[in-house]
Image 1 (tube, helix red, strand yellow):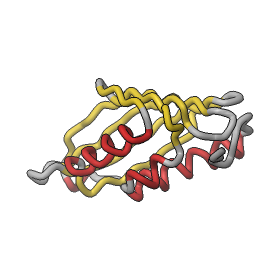
Image 2 (image 1 turned 45 degrees about the horizontal axis):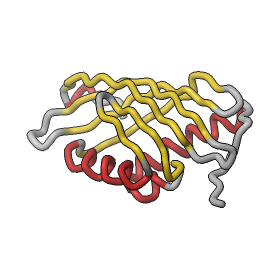
Image 3 (image 1 turned 120 degrees about the vertical axis):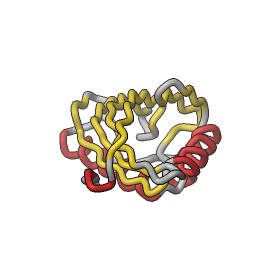
Image 4 (image 1 turned 180 degrees about the vertical axis):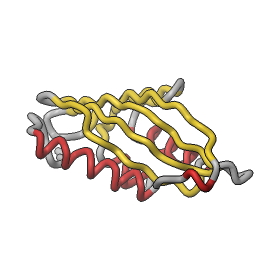
Length: 136
């Protein structure tokens, strides 16, 4: 059975570690690497898109970074319980026409006993910004 450490139940320290590992993985923009943190039957809501399964998550991420260029993400632990973590995040990206955006959002994560994320619910809003307004 695959495990993705740290595993629940989370402490403050292991929740912070899990958030940092997610940030690092997503900033790699490597769909395969990222997907290894999710269960085979992972369930996502990302904005208005619903994704079911690790393979579908990989395809979703591949398509995401074909549109969201020069992506840079920062996540912050918001709350945690035994097997759940909530984060706030912001990321910046550029479209193919050169317009920059900052996305703000919250995610709710639920993990199985092996530390793989079974559920990921993300609410995200995009704000057009000038390049001079970039922070990340």
